[in-house]
Image (cartoon, rainbow, N blue to C red):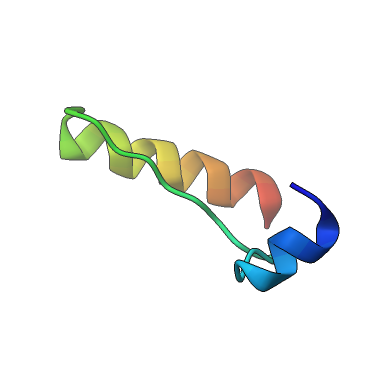
Length: 40
């Protein structure tokens, strides 16, 4: 998508997209904790 199309769709640089399947909630939590620790 072009920058204009992204902006019109509400997609910003700070957007975080989460796609969840059938993982165990503890695995998802651990993944989020690891990701957040890596950026902050």
